[in-house]
Length: 178
Image (cartoon, rainbow, N blue to C red; front, side, top):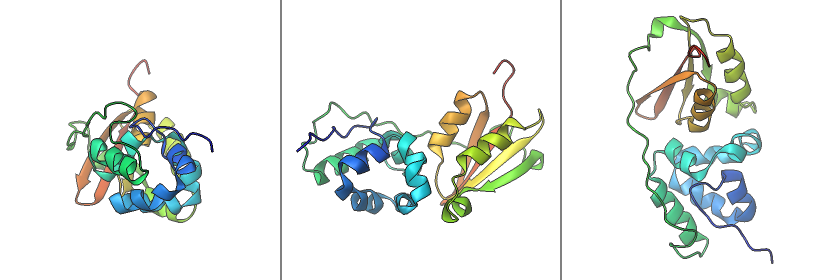
């Protein structure tokens, strides 16, 4: 039998589920947001680039709790693979630059995923076309942490406003020099 990789905050969701398929129900039980893993589009795209650290953030779980729960379900000692840092996403409110009147387009990520389409490429395409005074908006039932990280890495501004189980992610144009 091949040795399975350790379960760490940096383990990708797809890598985890390939090595430990029995952990899918454990992920889904941890947070309803993980039920979207049954969507083949999400599984082929976002799960391949999303770490367990980001998945915990999307689900609103402390990363330490998620990692320890997965390790226990896999029969691994809690301390294997090094320490687990507990990084929580900061509470975010509307940034000073967020003005709903400036929103030029809105993408409903949940609807796209349910119809078998991944929103990432559409968001990236539309974001690249934002004018200097325009904003984009992603509505979802989860914090789209991997997409936010990708957008910020490309120089876009982002702000997340959470209201109950609904997330509004605002995207501002690239900063000068990005």
